[in-house]
Image (cartoon, rainbow, N blue to C red; front, side):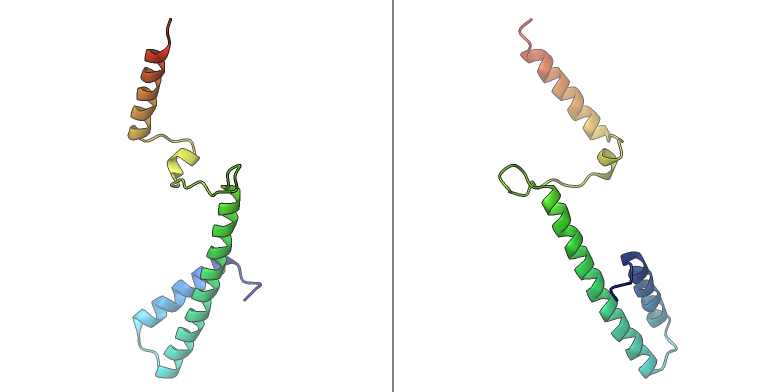
Length: 101
């Protein structure tokens, strides 16, 4: 399974789940698909674990400690939620109050 991409493995697993949910398979066919699904799920978990470790390495601070930050897709792609806009406005107001002139 090392030549299998994450996306292909996920797609294959989804296909297996659909076939098993649909039913109509013999016991041997169901067991074979289930076994393949378990192997794919294990592979996917391992790949996700590797990706998580890479992300942690990228998020380490100066002291080598991992900064815990929730992932916000909108912020990452440049969109702001209403809450973000309100917080930004409050921050600007706070900065204005702190300015002595």
